[in-house]
Image (cartoon, rainbow, N blue to C red; front, side, top):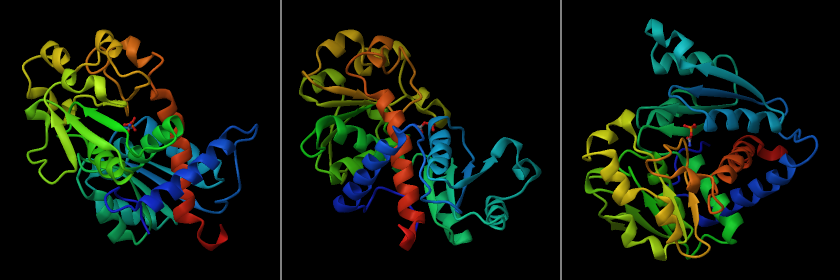
Length: 303
Ligand code: CP
């Protein structure tokens, strides 16, 4: 079994994984933050796109469960000699890992790797399609803070069109009963959001005062997101969470961002570091949720 998408996950399964993650938060707080749960297992980290948070947290999560890790670095690999994704995946499989964690710029690549290798695969981000472990850590962060995700009003703001985080979060947060509003210039919305269980708004000021959560996204220049609005200052004037706007947020509302942040564009530095920001908690929760997902996939009957 693999963990590839938040689409189709049941509410019960999500809460089971979040409960497990909460128990790993306790483990991570111990003097020796390690348990022998996956001793003898090996997790291969295969990142074909850059990453700081996802890659390092998967490595630490595997080690905190006493699993071994194998690291594949695309830039120094034999991809540069023309080796295909399929041959790369089969080569890594031949070294005996029990699970692959895959990030790739092509939509669907983790599904293909799962088919080719027959191994459990965790999607660590595929193109603009899915980033399910990010959405899970976001849900964990919101459940810890508010006690429940159901009924929360959540605005996802920014480059929705190119965002795998947005797609994974729309599916997951609505499954958990949140009301999601997408806030973006029309050029940064997907071509069709008909059928998505969301509202849309064309400026942050339209919805700011009623939202419990403002979830900010960076402009994905590497996927063309920077070319579809007139200027950064025009973007900030309608969509940036400035200090002034942060003062107009609903009392008790919080700010999330998956990182990396572009301070001064989608988020003001004082807001990123301010009391309503849960960004650091999101990063910390990345460890616990990835421990939960690895444990769920690999522990089997030994659990
Ligand atoms: N949020 C996230 O995926 O960050 P990285 O690209 O640093 O892994």
